[in-house]
Image 1 (tube, rainbow, N blue to C red):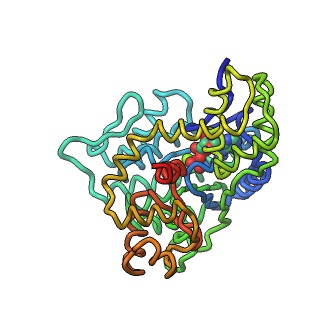
Image 2: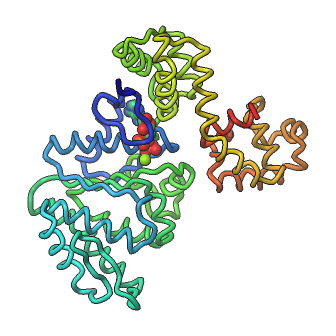
Image 3: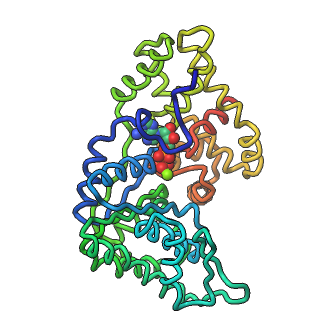
Length: 375
Ligand SMILES: Nc1ncnc2c1ncn2[C@@H]1O[C@H](COP(=O)(O)OP(=O)(O)O)[C@@H](O)[C@H]1O
Ligand SMILES: [Mg+2]
Protein backbone atom coordinates (compact mmCIF):
# COMPACT_ATOMS: atom_id res chain seq x y z
CA UNK A 1 0.00 0.00 0.00
CA UNK A 2 1.22 3.46 -0.85
CA UNK A 3 2.02 5.90 1.93
CA UNK A 4 -0.81 8.47 1.79
CA UNK A 5 1.16 11.32 3.38
CA UNK A 6 3.05 13.50 0.96
CA UNK A 7 5.78 16.02 1.65
CA UNK A 8 8.58 17.77 -0.18
CA UNK A 9 6.57 18.47 -3.28
CA UNK A 10 3.53 20.43 -4.29
CA UNK A 11 0.37 18.78 -2.95
CA UNK A 12 -2.81 18.67 -4.97
CA UNK A 13 -6.16 16.89 -5.02
CA UNK A 14 -6.91 14.78 -1.98
CA UNK A 15 -3.62 15.65 -0.29
CA UNK A 16 -4.43 19.34 -0.21
CA UNK A 17 -6.01 20.35 3.09
CA UNK A 18 -8.39 23.26 3.49
CA UNK A 19 -7.13 26.79 2.61
CA UNK A 20 -10.67 27.63 1.50
CA UNK A 21 -10.49 31.26 2.50
CA UNK A 22 -7.01 31.82 1.14
CA UNK A 23 -8.02 30.18 -2.12
CA UNK A 24 -11.14 32.32 -2.48
CA UNK A 25 -9.34 35.56 -1.56
CA UNK A 26 -6.44 34.97 -3.89
CA UNK A 27 -8.68 34.01 -6.78
CA UNK A 28 -10.80 37.10 -6.27
CA UNK A 29 -7.85 39.49 -5.99
CA UNK A 30 -6.23 38.04 -9.07
CA UNK A 31 -9.36 38.27 -11.17
CA UNK A 32 -9.60 41.89 -9.97
CA UNK A 33 -6.16 42.37 -11.58
CA UNK A 34 -4.43 43.27 -8.35
CA UNK A 35 -0.78 42.86 -7.40
CA UNK A 36 -0.67 40.53 -4.40
CA UNK A 37 2.15 39.48 -2.14
CA UNK A 38 1.83 36.01 -0.59
CA UNK A 39 4.27 35.61 2.27
CA UNK A 40 5.13 32.84 4.73
CA UNK A 41 8.10 30.86 5.96
CA UNK A 42 9.20 27.96 3.81
CA UNK A 43 7.11 24.79 3.94
CA UNK A 44 3.80 26.42 4.84
CA UNK A 45 2.25 25.62 1.49
CA UNK A 46 2.58 28.68 -0.75
CA UNK A 47 3.52 26.83 -3.91
CA UNK A 48 0.77 24.27 -3.33
CA UNK A 49 -1.75 27.04 -2.80
CA UNK A 50 -0.63 28.76 -6.01
CA UNK A 51 -1.09 25.53 -7.90
CA UNK A 52 -4.56 25.09 -6.44
CA UNK A 53 -5.54 28.67 -7.23
CA UNK A 54 -4.18 28.27 -10.72
CA UNK A 55 -6.54 25.30 -11.24
CA UNK A 56 -9.46 27.41 -10.01
CA UNK A 57 -8.52 30.24 -12.32
CA UNK A 58 -8.24 27.99 -15.34
CA UNK A 59 -11.78 26.79 -14.62
CA UNK A 60 -12.77 30.43 -14.91
CA UNK A 61 -11.09 30.60 -18.30
CA UNK A 62 -8.13 32.64 -17.14
CA UNK A 63 -4.66 32.06 -18.54
CA UNK A 64 -2.04 31.42 -15.89
CA UNK A 65 1.74 31.61 -16.11
CA UNK A 66 3.87 30.37 -13.19
CA UNK A 67 7.60 30.95 -12.65
CA UNK A 68 9.75 29.73 -9.78
CA UNK A 69 12.71 32.05 -9.28
CA UNK A 70 14.62 29.38 -7.34
CA UNK A 71 15.04 27.79 -10.76
CA UNK A 72 16.79 30.88 -12.15
CA UNK A 73 20.18 32.07 -11.07
CA UNK A 74 20.56 35.32 -12.99
CA UNK A 75 18.56 38.08 -14.61
CA UNK A 76 19.14 36.52 -18.05
CA UNK A 77 17.76 33.21 -16.86
CA UNK A 78 14.74 34.89 -15.36
CA UNK A 79 14.07 36.67 -18.64
CA UNK A 80 14.51 33.43 -20.56
CA UNK A 81 12.18 31.53 -18.26
CA UNK A 82 9.66 34.31 -18.48
CA UNK A 83 9.75 34.24 -22.26
CA UNK A 84 9.12 30.51 -22.16
CA UNK A 85 6.09 30.58 -19.93
CA UNK A 86 4.60 33.49 -21.85
CA UNK A 87 5.15 31.72 -25.15
CA UNK A 88 3.29 28.74 -23.73
CA UNK A 89 0.30 30.98 -23.11
CA UNK A 90 0.17 31.87 -26.76
CA UNK A 91 0.68 28.41 -28.12
CA UNK A 92 0.90 24.91 -26.76
CA UNK A 93 3.01 23.72 -29.68
CA UNK A 94 6.72 23.81 -28.98
CA UNK A 95 7.88 24.80 -32.47
CA UNK A 96 5.44 27.67 -32.58
CA UNK A 97 6.51 28.81 -29.15
CA UNK A 98 10.14 28.77 -30.20
CA UNK A 99 9.28 30.85 -33.24
CA UNK A 100 7.40 33.28 -31.08
CA UNK A 101 10.29 33.69 -28.66
CA UNK A 102 12.48 34.15 -31.71
CA UNK A 103 10.33 37.03 -32.84
CA UNK A 104 10.34 38.60 -29.43
CA UNK A 105 14.09 38.52 -29.05
CA UNK A 106 15.06 39.03 -32.68
CA UNK A 107 15.89 42.67 -32.14
CA UNK A 108 18.63 41.69 -29.77
CA UNK A 109 20.26 38.96 -31.75
CA UNK A 110 22.91 37.74 -32.11
CA UNK A 111 23.48 37.95 -28.37
CA UNK A 112 20.53 35.72 -27.57
CA UNK A 113 20.11 32.28 -29.05
CA UNK A 114 17.11 30.01 -28.96
CA UNK A 115 17.28 26.23 -28.78
CA UNK A 116 14.78 23.85 -30.30
CA UNK A 117 13.14 23.41 -26.94
CA UNK A 118 12.71 27.14 -26.44
CA UNK A 119 15.60 27.64 -24.04
CA UNK A 120 17.20 31.03 -24.42
CA UNK A 121 20.97 30.98 -24.30
CA UNK A 122 23.73 33.47 -24.90
CA UNK A 123 26.18 33.61 -27.77
CA UNK A 124 29.70 32.96 -26.67
CA UNK A 125 31.65 36.20 -26.30
CA UNK A 126 28.48 38.20 -26.68
CA UNK A 127 27.06 38.64 -23.22
CA UNK A 128 24.32 41.18 -23.75
CA UNK A 129 24.62 44.48 -22.02
CA UNK A 130 22.34 44.95 -19.08
CA UNK A 131 20.40 47.51 -21.02
CA UNK A 132 19.58 44.94 -23.68
CA UNK A 133 18.34 42.44 -21.14
CA UNK A 134 16.10 45.15 -19.75
CA UNK A 135 14.81 45.96 -23.23
CA UNK A 136 13.87 42.35 -23.73
CA UNK A 137 12.28 42.19 -20.31
CA UNK A 138 10.22 45.26 -21.07
CA UNK A 139 8.94 43.71 -24.27
CA UNK A 140 8.03 40.54 -22.43
CA UNK A 141 6.38 42.32 -19.54
CA UNK A 142 3.95 43.88 -21.95
CA UNK A 143 2.90 40.54 -23.44
CA UNK A 144 0.39 39.50 -20.75
CA UNK A 145 -1.54 42.74 -21.12
CA UNK A 146 -1.50 42.48 -24.92
CA UNK A 147 -2.65 38.89 -24.72
CA UNK A 148 -5.45 39.68 -22.26
CA UNK A 149 -6.80 42.44 -24.47
CA UNK A 150 -6.51 40.46 -27.67
CA UNK A 151 -8.20 37.32 -26.34
CA UNK A 152 -10.49 39.11 -23.90
CA UNK A 153 -9.56 36.83 -21.04
CA UNK A 154 -7.87 37.47 -17.73
CA UNK A 155 -4.16 36.70 -17.53
CA UNK A 156 -2.53 35.84 -14.24
CA UNK A 157 1.20 35.87 -13.60
CA UNK A 158 2.53 33.97 -10.57
CA UNK A 159 6.13 34.53 -9.55
CA UNK A 160 7.26 32.22 -6.76
CA UNK A 161 10.25 33.00 -4.51
CA UNK A 162 9.98 36.60 -5.66
CA UNK A 163 12.58 37.90 -3.18
CA UNK A 164 15.23 36.53 -5.57
CA UNK A 165 14.46 39.41 -7.92
CA UNK A 166 16.55 41.64 -5.68
CA UNK A 167 19.50 39.31 -6.11
CA UNK A 168 19.17 39.46 -9.90
CA UNK A 169 18.85 43.19 -10.32
CA UNK A 170 18.67 44.98 -6.98
CA UNK A 171 16.04 47.52 -6.10
CA UNK A 172 16.42 48.97 -9.56
CA UNK A 173 14.82 45.89 -11.11
CA UNK A 174 12.06 46.07 -8.53
CA UNK A 175 11.29 49.66 -9.55
CA UNK A 176 11.38 48.69 -13.14
CA UNK A 177 8.91 45.83 -12.72
CA UNK A 178 6.54 47.99 -10.74
CA UNK A 179 6.60 50.69 -13.39
CA UNK A 180 5.76 48.28 -16.20
CA UNK A 181 3.08 46.42 -14.26
CA UNK A 182 1.37 49.50 -12.89
CA UNK A 183 -0.41 50.43 -16.10
CA UNK A 184 -1.73 46.94 -16.84
CA UNK A 185 -5.47 46.79 -16.41
CA UNK A 186 -6.18 43.21 -17.41
CA UNK A 187 -3.48 41.24 -15.65
CA UNK A 188 -3.29 39.96 -12.08
CA UNK A 189 0.03 39.30 -10.39
CA UNK A 190 0.92 37.28 -7.34
CA UNK A 191 4.42 37.44 -5.94
CA UNK A 192 5.08 34.76 -3.41
CA UNK A 193 8.10 34.25 -1.22
CA UNK A 194 9.57 32.65 1.86
CA UNK A 195 12.09 35.25 3.01
CA UNK A 196 9.58 36.92 5.25
CA UNK A 197 11.64 39.88 6.38
CA UNK A 198 12.87 40.66 2.85
CA UNK A 199 9.37 40.56 1.40
CA UNK A 200 7.87 42.50 4.26
CA UNK A 201 10.46 45.22 3.67
CA UNK A 202 9.53 45.27 0.00
CA UNK A 203 5.90 46.09 0.67
CA UNK A 204 6.14 48.12 3.85
CA UNK A 205 9.05 50.52 3.30
CA UNK A 206 8.16 53.80 1.71
CA UNK A 207 11.32 53.90 -0.36
CA UNK A 208 10.57 50.59 -2.08
CA UNK A 209 8.81 50.20 -5.41
CA UNK A 210 6.09 47.82 -4.20
CA UNK A 211 5.18 49.91 -1.16
CA UNK A 212 1.38 49.71 -0.84
CA UNK A 213 1.09 48.10 -4.26
CA UNK A 214 -1.80 45.86 -3.27
CA UNK A 215 -2.98 43.21 -0.79
CA UNK A 216 -0.40 41.40 1.30
CA UNK A 217 -1.38 37.91 2.45
CA UNK A 218 0.54 36.17 5.20
CA UNK A 219 -0.12 32.48 4.86
CA UNK A 220 -0.84 31.00 8.28
CA UNK A 221 -0.71 27.46 9.59
CA UNK A 222 -3.59 25.11 8.83
CA UNK A 223 -6.19 24.73 11.60
CA UNK A 224 -5.86 21.75 13.96
CA UNK A 225 -9.40 20.55 13.25
CA UNK A 226 -8.72 20.21 9.53
CA UNK A 227 -5.53 18.28 10.20
CA UNK A 228 -7.25 15.93 12.64
CA UNK A 229 -9.89 15.09 10.08
CA UNK A 230 -7.33 14.59 7.31
CA UNK A 231 -4.85 12.51 9.30
CA UNK A 232 -7.49 10.28 10.89
CA UNK A 233 -9.09 9.68 7.54
CA UNK A 234 -5.82 8.61 5.91
CA UNK A 235 -4.92 6.24 8.76
CA UNK A 236 -8.42 4.81 8.84
CA UNK A 237 -8.36 4.12 5.13
CA UNK A 238 -5.09 2.24 5.67
CA UNK A 239 -6.77 0.26 8.48
CA UNK A 240 -4.47 1.69 11.14
CA UNK A 241 -6.05 2.72 14.45
CA UNK A 242 -5.36 6.22 15.76
CA UNK A 243 -7.23 8.38 18.25
CA UNK A 244 -7.57 12.16 18.49
CA UNK A 245 -5.07 12.62 21.31
CA UNK A 246 -2.36 10.90 19.28
CA UNK A 247 -3.16 12.91 16.16
CA UNK A 248 -2.85 16.08 18.23
CA UNK A 249 0.54 14.88 19.41
CA UNK A 250 1.69 14.59 15.78
CA UNK A 251 0.48 18.09 15.02
CA UNK A 252 2.16 19.53 18.11
CA UNK A 253 5.46 17.75 17.49
CA UNK A 254 5.40 19.12 13.95
CA UNK A 255 4.64 22.59 15.36
CA UNK A 256 1.63 22.54 13.08
CA UNK A 257 3.80 23.41 10.06
CA UNK A 258 2.25 21.70 7.01
CA UNK A 259 5.44 20.12 5.70
CA UNK A 260 6.36 18.66 9.10
CA UNK A 261 2.82 17.48 9.83
CA UNK A 262 2.88 15.53 6.58
CA UNK A 263 6.40 14.19 6.98
CA UNK A 264 5.85 13.10 10.59
CA UNK A 265 2.58 11.44 9.63
CA UNK A 266 4.40 9.75 6.75
CA UNK A 267 7.04 8.30 9.05
CA UNK A 268 4.48 7.31 11.70
CA UNK A 269 2.45 5.49 9.06
CA UNK A 270 5.57 3.61 7.97
CA UNK A 271 6.31 2.52 11.55
CA UNK A 272 2.81 1.18 12.20
CA UNK A 273 2.47 -1.09 9.22
CA UNK A 274 2.91 -4.15 11.44
CA UNK A 275 1.23 -3.13 14.67
CA UNK A 276 -1.65 -1.34 12.89
CA UNK A 277 -2.00 0.99 15.85
CA UNK A 278 -0.46 4.42 16.51
CA UNK A 279 0.47 5.38 20.05
CA UNK A 280 2.53 8.21 21.52
CA UNK A 281 5.65 6.06 21.75
CA UNK A 282 5.60 5.42 18.01
CA UNK A 283 5.44 9.15 17.36
CA UNK A 284 8.54 9.67 19.50
CA UNK A 285 10.24 6.92 17.51
CA UNK A 286 9.18 8.55 14.26
CA UNK A 287 10.71 11.88 15.33
CA UNK A 288 13.93 10.15 16.38
CA UNK A 289 14.08 8.34 13.10
CA UNK A 290 13.59 11.51 11.04
CA UNK A 291 16.22 13.38 13.06
CA UNK A 292 18.58 10.43 12.73
CA UNK A 293 18.21 10.38 8.94
CA UNK A 294 19.62 13.91 8.80
CA UNK A 295 22.28 13.51 11.47
CA UNK A 296 25.23 13.71 9.06
CA UNK A 297 23.98 17.03 7.74
CA UNK A 298 23.39 18.34 11.28
CA UNK A 299 26.80 17.25 12.52
CA UNK A 300 28.53 18.93 9.58
CA UNK A 301 26.49 22.10 10.06
CA UNK A 302 27.15 22.16 13.81
CA UNK A 303 30.87 21.68 13.48
CA UNK A 304 31.13 24.64 11.16
CA UNK A 305 29.59 26.99 13.69
CA UNK A 306 31.65 29.03 16.15
CA UNK A 307 30.95 28.21 19.79
CA UNK A 308 29.03 31.44 20.46
CA UNK A 309 26.57 30.57 17.73
CA UNK A 310 26.32 27.02 19.06
CA UNK A 311 25.50 28.30 22.55
CA UNK A 312 22.95 30.70 21.14
CA UNK A 313 21.25 27.91 19.18
CA UNK A 314 21.23 25.70 22.24
CA UNK A 315 19.52 28.43 24.21
CA UNK A 316 16.90 28.97 21.54
CA UNK A 317 16.35 25.22 21.11
CA UNK A 318 15.63 24.93 24.84
CA UNK A 319 13.11 27.66 24.27
CA UNK A 320 13.02 28.63 27.94
CA UNK A 321 13.27 32.29 27.13
CA UNK A 322 11.51 34.02 24.31
CA UNK A 323 13.86 36.89 23.69
CA UNK A 324 17.53 35.96 23.17
CA UNK A 325 18.45 39.62 23.61
CA UNK A 326 17.29 39.67 27.22
CA UNK A 327 19.87 40.06 29.99
CA UNK A 328 18.77 36.79 31.52
CA UNK A 329 19.42 34.85 28.32
CA UNK A 330 22.79 36.53 27.76
CA UNK A 331 24.04 35.57 31.22
CA UNK A 332 22.60 32.08 31.23
CA UNK A 333 24.11 31.13 27.89
CA UNK A 334 27.41 32.96 28.38
CA UNK A 335 26.92 35.21 25.39
CA UNK A 336 29.36 37.98 26.47
CA UNK A 337 27.20 40.88 25.39
CA UNK A 338 24.06 41.98 23.67
CA UNK A 339 26.00 42.91 20.55
CA UNK A 340 27.47 39.39 20.36
CA UNK A 341 23.92 38.04 20.34
CA UNK A 342 22.78 40.53 17.71
CA UNK A 343 25.68 39.70 15.41
CA UNK A 344 25.27 35.95 15.87
CA UNK A 345 21.53 36.12 15.24
CA UNK A 346 22.14 38.01 12.00
CA UNK A 347 24.70 35.45 10.86
CA UNK A 348 22.45 32.52 11.72
CA UNK A 349 19.59 34.16 9.86
CA UNK A 350 21.81 34.64 6.84
CA UNK A 351 22.77 30.98 6.95
CA UNK A 352 19.07 30.08 6.92
CA UNK A 353 19.36 28.35 10.28
CA UNK A 354 17.20 30.80 12.19
CA UNK A 355 14.33 32.95 11.17
CA UNK A 356 12.88 35.95 12.95
CA UNK A 357 9.25 35.88 13.93
CA UNK A 358 8.38 39.12 15.69
CA UNK A 359 10.76 39.34 18.64
CA UNK A 360 11.28 35.60 18.70
CA UNK A 361 13.74 33.55 16.74
CA UNK A 362 12.72 30.16 15.41
CA UNK A 363 14.58 27.34 13.71
CA UNK A 364 14.05 27.09 9.95
CA UNK A 365 14.34 23.32 10.34
CA UNK A 366 12.50 22.20 13.47
CA UNK A 367 14.31 18.84 13.51
CA UNK A 368 17.68 20.57 13.77
CA UNK A 369 16.54 22.04 17.05
CA UNK A 370 15.42 18.55 18.14
CA UNK A 371 18.86 17.18 17.21
CA UNK A 372 20.61 19.89 19.24
CA UNK A 373 18.58 18.98 22.31
CA UNK A 374 19.21 15.26 22.00
CA UNK A 375 22.85 15.52 21.05
N1 LIG B 1 -2.82 22.69 1.95
C1 LIG B 1 -2.00 21.70 2.29
N2 LIG B 1 -2.48 20.49 2.66
C2 LIG B 1 -1.68 19.50 3.03
N3 LIG B 1 -0.35 19.56 3.05
C3 LIG B 1 0.22 20.73 2.70
C4 LIG B 1 -0.57 21.85 2.30
N4 LIG B 1 0.26 22.86 2.00
C5 LIG B 1 1.51 22.39 2.19
N5 LIG B 1 1.50 21.12 2.61
C6 LIG B 1 2.68 20.28 2.96
O1 LIG B 1 3.83 21.13 3.03
C7 LIG B 1 4.78 20.78 2.03
C8 LIG B 1 5.41 22.04 1.47
O2 LIG B 1 4.46 22.75 0.71
P1 LIG B 1 4.87 23.86 -0.36
O3 LIG B 1 3.63 24.22 -1.07
O4 LIG B 1 6.04 23.42 -1.14
O5 LIG B 1 5.30 25.04 0.64
P2 LIG B 1 6.10 26.40 0.37
O6 LIG B 1 5.95 26.72 -1.08
O7 LIG B 1 5.44 27.41 1.27
O8 LIG B 1 7.52 26.15 0.79
C9 LIG B 1 4.02 19.95 1.02
O9 LIG B 1 4.87 19.03 0.37
C10 LIG B 1 3.01 19.25 1.90
O10 LIG B 1 3.60 18.15 2.54
MG1 LIG C 1 7.43 26.98 -2.54
